[in-house]
Amino acid sequence: MPVAIITGASSGLGLATARALAERGWSVAADARGAARLRAALAGAPDGASAGAPAGRIIAVPGDVADARHRAGLAAAGRALGPIALLLNNASRLGPSPQPALADYPAAELAAVYAVNVLAPVALTRLVIADLLGTGGTVVNVSSDAAVEAYGGWGGYGSSKAALDQVSAILGAEQPSLRVYAFDPGDMRTELHQQAFPGEDISDRPEAATVVPALLRLLDERPPSGRYRAADLLAAVLR
Image (cartoon, rainbow, N blue to C red; front, top):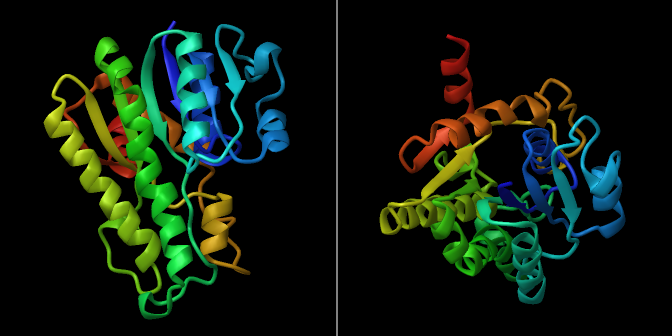
């Protein structure tokens, strides 16, 4: 049974992907900062698997992905489940809301954004890369259109995601036996997106679950390492 490690799995894309993989028979080590919330989100079937997913197993590994001790525990929890075939670096930090211009960005906040969005994915990848090489596995780093578009006020988050895109590209070049994807899910109706637009109605944005088929397509078809947009992958499925 393949194993996935998913960060930021108490809601949004992380939670939706954990459930979808469990339905396919995967075991999942799921991380998020809030222990009670993570366990509640994953509740609904034995061993934390989502309802309708009896073949898979999801275990909650609560903690802050920016903390080295927690990352070590998360990697160990994944190994305890079986061979690690997927690392989904989904946990993200927006930064202050409303978002300040770069000239006014508090240095401590900028460092915290980079710690979660860049340094933690790199560190976690380093911890499990031997496992992934053993399975010919996949790394998916969740990106954003803010990584490639220059949106005023998005300098902290956008530049951190641009850095993560480059990390993904270099890792893919260095490790040709792996698949390494920078995955841009597009706008979603998530808490982070709401933080980016405080006080605005984002009910027109799609639910995170609607993006999961695009991510699963990457896992199923294993195209070359690179940057992929969910909108493009979903459009190809629908044709």
